[in-house]
Image 1 (cartoon, helix red, strand yellow):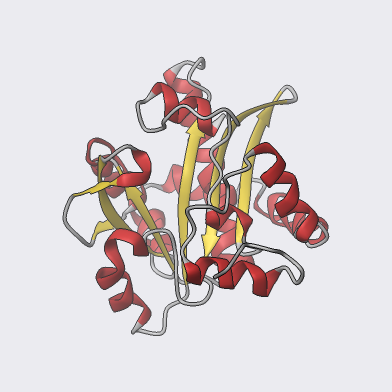
Image 2 (image 1 turned 120 degrees about the vertical axis):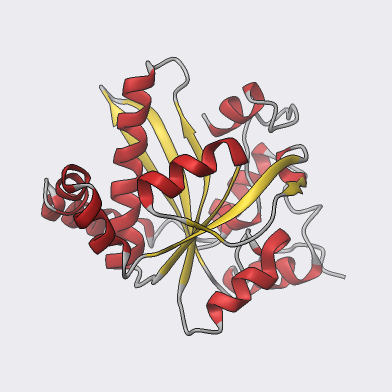
Length: 238
């Protein structure tokens, strides 16, 4: 879904694997969040909890992110957001809110993150600032991994946003923090317990079969990190 959606939007080059997989997707600190309707995946995003002092957003906005780190914050990033484009606008917004609700619970309540960052196209940034109370923390820059499309960095303080939402949007507060909250949290804990057995060298080799050049463009440091997580993994680290 991510590959297809990004390709349709001009943010992805064609790839024989038909998948959009990168370094962060191979890390145990990367969490795939999906929403299904009638057994079909209709929305997904990836939450990346910072590891080794790095996030995908550091590629462009390291200076801005380091300022947040210097306050003792634990940062996560939302990336690879995709919602089924065949759905109506109303249903797509519903899926987006479901994704964010689950990811908020995962990031702030289960992974202990204090701040959330995202790189987003400027035409969507106003919505995120108005609806979720993100703040812009840097200037617009072209992002190579989405075919050079413009991106702006946004940051959300997960410790204060709950009160902001409560004061400004009671309906959204009920949806995010009261309606089915305990059930979603318990279900997510179960999913976390299951996923621990998935991140091994077999997972990396599975993706390499689908995308043989997966590790070719990684930096030396990224290869070192992967070899540390997966003993026995050969990345041809020179």
